[in-house]
Length: 94
Image 1 (cartoon, rainbow, N blue to C red):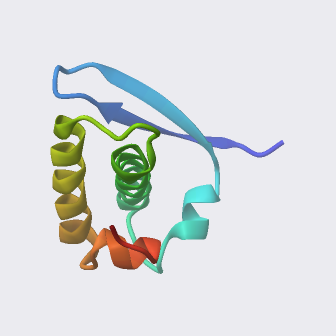
Image 2 (cartoon, helix red, strand yellow):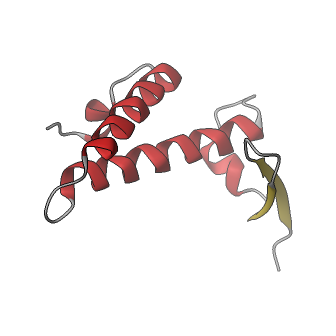
């Protein structure tokens, strides 16, 4: 059985959630010398950006205006972190 590693996420209100991942999984996505916590944070940003895009652009019946604003902000945060627009990372734009 593979060991696990625990990462902790803390919310703005101080609440925390422990997240266990199989040991070595984070290393699969890391560049040499990259801090494992940065890798986990990158995956979280990628996941939220992708999910916000789906809700904003691929929901049946369209998304409320506030979702569009949230998605735009998430796209900016994605580009700030990775240096490329989300549309380039996804391979399509709207």
